Length: 586
Image 1 (cartoon, rainbow, N blue to C red):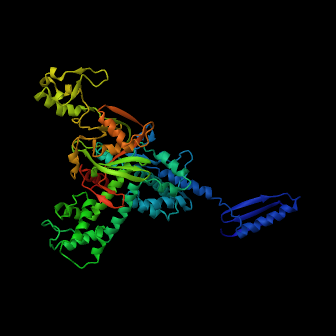
Image 2 (tube, one colour):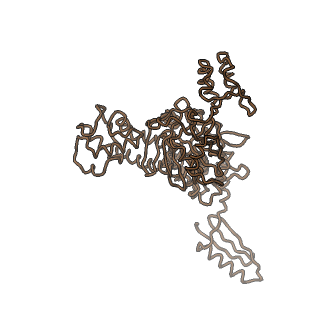
Image 3 (cartoon, one colour):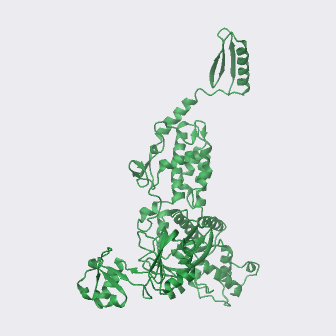
């Protein structure tokens, strides 16, 4: 505080306390000696430091900092921002910090004239550890921010405050809803990327109102087990990379159990690094023979990578082993990104479909109740990614044939055989409205019907073994016109890769899913026996769920199973490569 001078002036009835940081005057009445005593006590308290003077230039320092801050409220190029109704949203090329600072009472958020405040340190800490969430700290200018942390000049502190605000907004958007760049790279392929309704101003307001900033930021990423599992796997694979990863194994003949092959030591080393090797083999001397014990480890590796678990070390197994650890890390990161794009509150009871793994899992109270194989859309008719709620179940459903299928598939068949619809129990209607009249398909010359005209007809197939929807259909109205349903072609579920549908999800065990969806149904005990009885009646029945069931269609080429084991699968739609390019310019 510097030197302090205290002067009690009895004639002027005042006490003055002076220091290098300011001056303060106390006046008192000469008729009350007690005031003189109090003035002396105040002097002693100031001198001993019990009371500190507020520097008279504190306001001047803040004014200088505010003036400097106004110079740094620039417009930045920011891919996640946009302008909507004069309010910051998420799509413009430029983002002006003036929209998130209060221009009427401009003050820095994170710094004071003395330097960065506690919240500034919290923000920098989260930006630095963004890599734990699969984000790159460099995208949030942590080096520039760190350099400015020792600054004391108004201009540097103002720059620091602006950088903290700007990058905090970017980080909150990215860690909560995922980077939006892929949406612009391919809107049709990544329509779910980012949040086009993101509001930076309201985001900063929430941050400022948070009673504990660290807790607020900690709760931003998805908190469900699927994301947390990938986050742990990311940490593990980064450690593997730091320790040297694994080497590539040469191609050659298929290695089968009991074969002797010089590549076996390299295979064992790889399995040891990835955690697939049976622990007892780690203590064994170097071998070149493919033992039964090693086969168990190979099968475990194959299951983890979506391969046929035949125990043979062939081209596909070697290809999976030769994927560099850096590529596996990127694969984990892009799947963490996908989770941020989806609904984060999955629900207490829900089903989740992993398109890339061709399976459906039912979850209740945090526990996986069951899982079974599914068939998803083929490459040219991909199953979309989104979340919704199953609102009804149809037993012995009709199939309203989509316009595209009617145009591209049914019309050519009708031109060859006018009786085609009748043979396949398909009815023809004049249009798509409720009042459309039924038409005799044999009365039409289909060679004169154009594809555009065909789309105006409505085709509906009756329930029965010929119906591709099978015996049960799960409805969740959506813009993609997809749903879950049974299928008469159950033999396809034995295949390892199952992308054969027009976009809907075909179920290998629809009865089990129906019982799960109806387990809390009001007004009826819908156990499997009752559902089967209703199916056998051959009548079309619609059951409206009293408690709609959340359904999440995901595309995870990397995930963690219920045992905490990281799994990988082939990218059936070729989305990983495009997403990597959009996120990392690779």
